[in-house]
Image 1 (cartoon, helix red, strand yellow):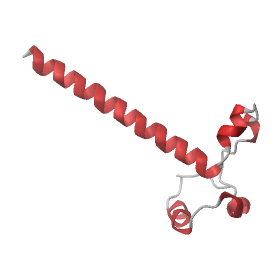
Image 2 (cartoon, one colour; image 1 turned 180 degrees about the horizontal axis):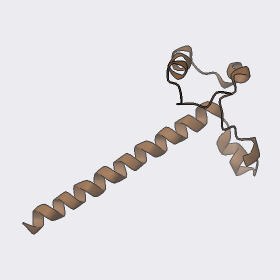
Image 3 (cartoon, rainbow, N blue to C red; image 1 turned 45 degrees about the horizontal axis):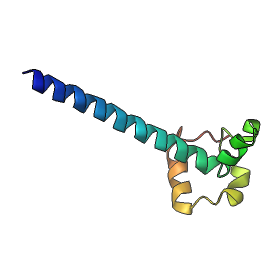
Image 4 (spheres, rainbow, N blue to C red; image 1 turned 30 degrees about the vertical axis):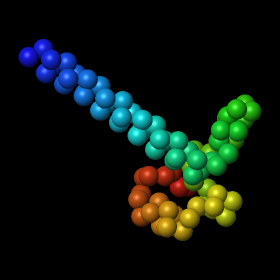
Length: 82
């Protein structure tokens, strides 16, 4: 019986870690779409330059594929678009 509980706890921890990894990857992807060079900005102490919203006037510079842009527009609240 103790073995079953141990396996259950291990699976719960594994699921939690897996979920956390997915959330982190989504957050990183989200940041990269708005700021393709965010890692460089943060590494160079320019955190204030990291955008927290998707600037529509800079879409050409962001190189967002048309299909992704269509999904972003069809998903209100996914990205902050002023």
